[in-house]
Image (cartoon, rainbow, N blue to C red; front, side):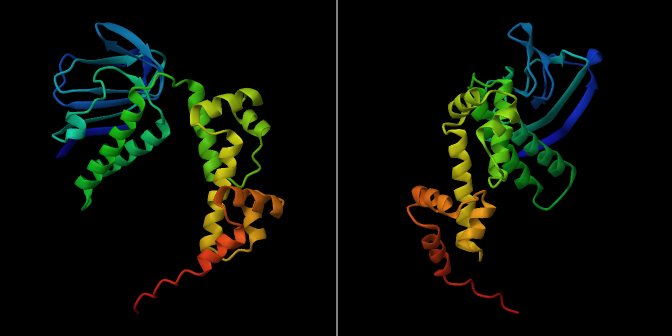
Length: 264
């Protein structure tokens, strides 16, 4: 069971005058900052960067305030008996940087929507969203290598995944981040375990497989849509990654039985 008392997204405050000071909170409280902030941790006030998260247990002291002229955050106050919350290994009262703040923000927005609208599946939707959010907290809380550049790399990777057919080159990607091509290749591989160009190729082939298996485009049309200007080059890369030529892969889709029509 999860009961949300309040949930807000993108709450903005006048920085110099904003302080939250609760000697002993009565509910669970999850806070995401979108600007730098000061938190009371282990008996002292410490500054943490933007895109930090902190989870407070019931009965725990809550104290945080802005460290600049403006403070923006997301927060949710709730009660629950769900083990994924009550038994979480996420450290309470200690802020940590989020691995993927955009993803977490979207989950938070959906939680706010579900909380504000009484729809039939409200309770189960809130549980699923909060469970996913706690999974993302777990992915973040024990990392110590998250830097501001990490967030720029994430945005670049999302852009590649969403538009693999664009004209991606190492210089263009480096310019996207305002860093040198050599440094881009180094930190991209270190962060994601794959080189930036291999990531582009893998996403292009992923998209090509969808077009070939489920679509009616020719191999040349698929190659063009996936960012290739040379069909032979596309075919070589496709076979290297899949073990089949594009046409062989396409034939597999053609041989699948058609779905039955819905009864009228």
